[in-house]
Length: 277
Image (tube, rainbow, N blue to C red; front, top):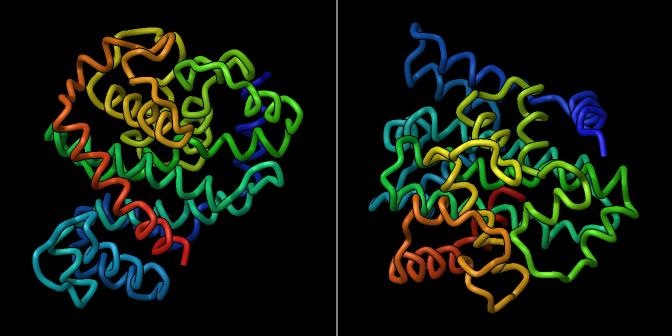
């Protein structure tokens, strides 16, 4: 299945909201400070509300109540606020490309869980800018909706294939590309930052090169989320065709894994509803 027509369709069917574009421009402008960023967010009631709610959520774990956008930015930072705007934008994009063969509520829940898991792993690894992994986890499955809408029969066959395998291995089998890879090309057309584009585009199967830490974190989060959503008892490391080098690079022990999954199961529904409201 050619990747380019799907990317072209997505880029023509959905454009980034003005607030999102302006926020990125302000963050990249050295003349702008947090007050300028706060003013931009404040003119968007939906984004303002979600910035405050997410800043006060377990996603950021700040010990006291945050009541203003300015205070939220001083605590979580401008980049984290931008990632919140991208998460909201992803929700809008998902609804634009919604397909009748996908249960949107379940799909959104899974996307957010992948984001929560990815961010949790990044925090465990003390990876710089761990908040962006929340958005990466959400965005990685964007192209799945488009494929389901434009190639319904092949997608249905893919979903009905109950053979246990590493998730991206099965995607390659049916589509000749992975969903994260295709999603990376789509958000590149939307001019999203390279820090979001590059890890997604790199997730092919089998890997063309040794993965860096960012790519490994996202890869492991996707595999964990897939096992969780499918309810399989197979351990991640025993999935056929799983990239063991990525698992070793991330290096989660049993205690890390249990903590991440406990937190993700507890918080995912709350965060998914908050962004979707």
